Length: 113
Length: 116
Image (cartoon, rainbow over all chains, first blue to last red; front, side, top):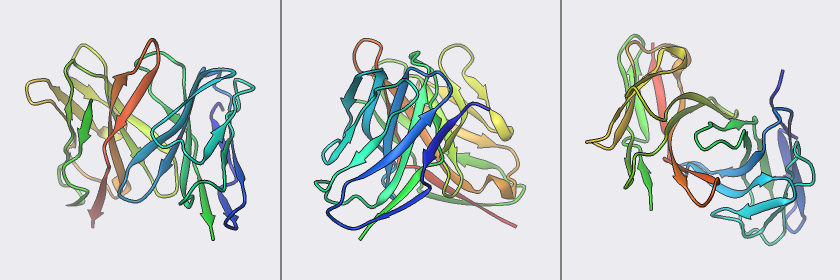
């Protein structure tokens, strides 16, 4: 079955460490997205990529970095510069057409202490 | 800029009762509209979408929504709630950024509880 795989499901890190969240899709979608979800704040866009080797900042990109070296992969690095990294992170993809819905992975819950 | 308002962060209904989750948007042009559902500790799943054509849209799990341009609304309904409907529901509106890029504007979500 095609889908989006996020790993790991739960991730724990010490403050000051960078951490990379994995997102892989086998849907052959052009566009990929990273969202952050906090209670009561809905979904906030971190980064998105429409094609390989190209990506744009979303609304809350500070303290995060991404790469898009392959169509199927869009890893997110949470750097030590991110002030409040503990959150639920969701990766999504879409074919790229204007009205196409997003397909989501099951998320990674990151806890930084 | 577009915005999406979901009235009621928490809605509680009895099993078998009508479900009504409200979504209003602000937009100068008719947008594309989506409803997603999220079960605990999972990603979001598309319930239904409106792009063009018929304003009453049917989705999965017995849900439907009606696009009302005059009211700038896209409320989600289900005639009879089931315990398995308990989840978080998100309304989203597309916002054309530039070229072929598309950016979704999300509501803050409504948590639906279904009581036995």
